Amino acid sequence: MKKYFLLLVIILLSACKNKQENKEEVVLWTPYNDSIEVAANADHENGRMQYKLIQSKILDKNEVFSPLYEEVSKLTEEKYQKLLPLIMEQDIFVIRNHIKEGRLTYENLVLFYLHRIYKYELDNTTTLNTVIALNKDVVEQARELDRLSEKGVATQIQHPIYGMPILLKDNINTLGMKTTAGSIALMDNEVNDSYIVQQLKKNGALILGKVNLSEWAYFLCSGCPVGYSAYGGQTLNPYGRRVFETGGSSSGSGTAVAANYAVAAVGTETSGSILSPSSQNSVVGLKPTIGLLSRSGIVPISSTLDTPGPMTKNVKDNAILLSAMLGYDELDPASVKDNFPGVLSAGLHPIPFSDMRLGAIKELMQTDSIYKKTIEDLKKAGATIVEFTPPEVAMNGFLSILNIDMRNDLKSYLKEYTDPKLVKISSVTDAVTFNNQDSLLRIPYGQALFNGILSDSTTTAELEEIKSTLEKNGRTFFDNAMDKHKLDAVLSINNYHAGYAAVAKYPALTVPMGYKTTGEPISLTFIGKQFSEANLLRLGKSYEEKFPNRVLPKGYQN
Image 1: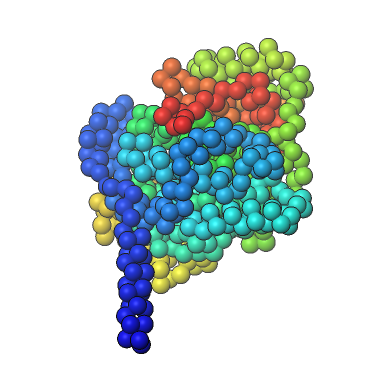
Image 2 (image 1 turned 135 degrees about the vertical axis):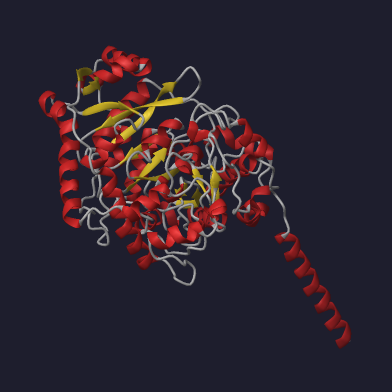
C-alpha cells in the first residue's frame, strides 16, 4: 500500500511539473522579420522615421504577456464587446459610476484594458511596441478592491483615481517591474516605488504596467527616431504606424492612451517630452510647474527642468491623475508644500469664454491654418484674444544645463536607487563604455548626446549663470504680453514653445486641436505662469467641451 501511495505522489508531482512547464511554454507572440517595414521607411520624408529596426532585439513579449494569459483569456470577446460602451473613451467619473451601480467591476475594468493590449500588441500588424511590462498581480489587486466593495469596507471617501488602471513611463521607479529608461544597461534594474507611484497607490490606483519611451528620455542619440529604445524597440503611432512620429520622449504613454490601453498614463518632460507625444497622439498632456510633482525615484536628465505629468484622453481625467500624484517630497529639493485643492475639481469647472483673456502668437497665425481657425473660433465663442509677437530672447547654454545636470544627476540616481549587483554602470561614462561594447545592439543610432555630456566643460559657476539667465529669458518670452494684457495663458501649438516654458519653469497643457489633411494630429497648447495648473485645466476643459476634436485612431476602435 505504501508503494502505491508513493507512486501516486510521484505521478501527481510529475503532473504538476508538466502543468507548470506547459504554462511557461505558452507562446502568444512570434518574432517576425521587420526588414520589409524598415525598407518601406527608407525614403520617408522625415529622416527621423528612416528606421534601422522596429521590433526589439532584446524584449521577449512572451515573458511580458504569458504570466497574465490565463486571466485575460477568461474574458471572452462577447463579454469584451459588452464592456466596450461602458469603458471605451469614458472619463473616470463615468467609469466609477458604472462600478458604483453594479454594471462594472474593477476586475472587468482591468481585464478590458488587458484584452485590448493583448489584442493589438501581440499582433505584429497592429502592435505599437508600447507596453513593455505588466504588473502580474494587477488582476488579483482589482479583485481585492471588488471584495472590499462587497464588504462595504471601501465606502469611505475615495480619491477618484481609486481602482483606475494606470500605465507608467519606464523611467519611473516601480516595485515589481524593472525600470529601464529603455536602456539595455538598466534592463535588470529592480527598484522600490518612486514617490509619485507611492502617492498613486496610496490613493488606490492600480498600476497596470510600464510603457516604452525614447531611450534615456531622448537624450542619447542625435536626430534619431523618437520613441525608440534598445530595450523596447520602436514605438509606433496608432494614427499612422510608420507614417507619423510618436513624439517623445513619453512615446509609450501617448500611444497607449490614444489606443485606450489604460484609463491614463504618466509621462515625464524635460523640454517637450509630454507635450510632444500628447500632441502627436491626440491626447491631453500636462507639463506641470517644476516642483509641483516629485521627481525622486525617476531616472533623470535634469534636476533643474525634469517633471512627471499626466497624459489622458480628456481634461477631467488629467486633473484627477495630477491630483493623485500631488504631495510634498522631502527627497526632492524643488518639491513644494501645498495641496493645491483647486486641481482635482478643475476639470469640472470650465471657465466661461467671456472671462478668458488669451494670447495668440502672430507668427503661428500666419503659418498654421488650423491654429488660425482655432483662434477665430475662440473669438466667436466669446474669448478675448490678444495677438502679439514674443520678444526675441537668447537660449544660449540650454544644452549645457542638460549635459551637466545629467552628468551629476544620473550618477546620483544610480548610487541612490540601483543595486550594483544588477546594474553595472554608475555614471554616464560607464554607460558610454557599456554601449560601445556592442554598438549595433545597444546604440544603433549612436550616442552623440551622451558623448556631448562627457565633452561639455561648462563650470559650476558658468552653469548657474546659464540657469539664471535662461529662466529670466524664458519668463520674459511669455510675461511681456501676459503682464501687459493681463492674459490667462499664451496659446501655442504642440511643443513649439516647450523650451521657453521649460527654462521659465512654467506649466503647459496641450489639448487636441484637430488633424492635418494627412490625418496627423495637432494640438493647442495653453502656457501659463507658475502653479497656474488649475486655471489651465479649466481653460482646457472649456475648449475641449466646446470643440471636442479628439477622434479615435482607425484600427483601434473595437
